[in-house]
Image (cartoon, rainbow, N blue to C red; front, side, top):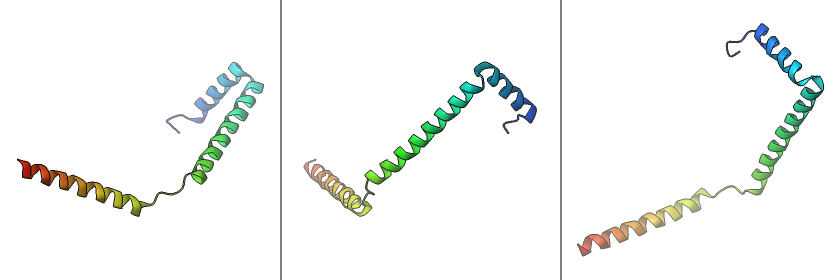
Length: 80
């Protein structure tokens, strides 16, 4: 795992445990879990609110814009 063995991971865990203490690590883990849960629920809620886009309608709009550009291009060519 990222070129680290079990021994290195245990050393890092021991240093983190000494720095923060078991109570603080438990609180940090709980807060992280709550943040992830809130993020997931917000993403699901956004999906429910935002309706899927109609690609056929978008294609007609783009086609109309292209036709308009062609017309203006042809008119400018005639003027030259």
